[in-house]
Length: 221
Image 1 (cartoon, one colour):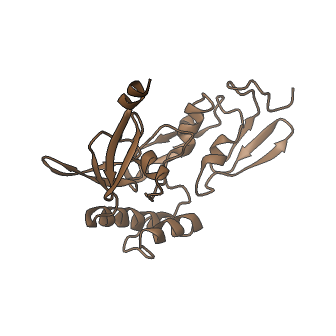
Image 2 (cartoon, rainbow, N blue to C red):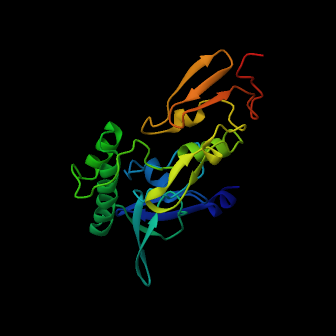
Image 3 (cartoon, rainbow, N blue to C red):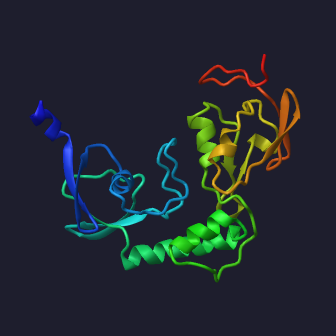
């Protein structure tokens, strides 16, 4: 039995620290289990790895030279050598933080996140928005609730999180999962009646429905 268990254990090095872990875990998960800090924004333990924010980048040593990967999506491998705070990684994170400050510098969470990587101001100018397009809300709606009431529309600087066609979606059951996973409090809602709510982010009113996961009826019926 011990030999079988050993087959599923790998050894890697993170910041010169030798670590033994199980097969199938991401670099980020292994680092966190061993008190090695890596900043994240789009990552959430309840959601599938996304790798969109680029804050969790780390640098790998490979026979062909260094390689930069997102630690939340890249699996830990036997013999891997990982560095989480090289000059290349620091510069990359700081650029991301500067862009985040340019977009949402009024949000306390974003200011704290930027400060954690050594950034307190930004040379960039962007339209102000509390939403930082981490896609947590979109992914939570799909992966946790089993709905697709919201999505990311458009491209480039015009990207935005909206319901389909920018109107109230019949898929929304007002479970508030999107509100709970949003790191910047960009999504807010109020009860209008006992059976409906309005989401201020999209200026849409929704009727409460039943959760497909637990079958709990949100309107109490």
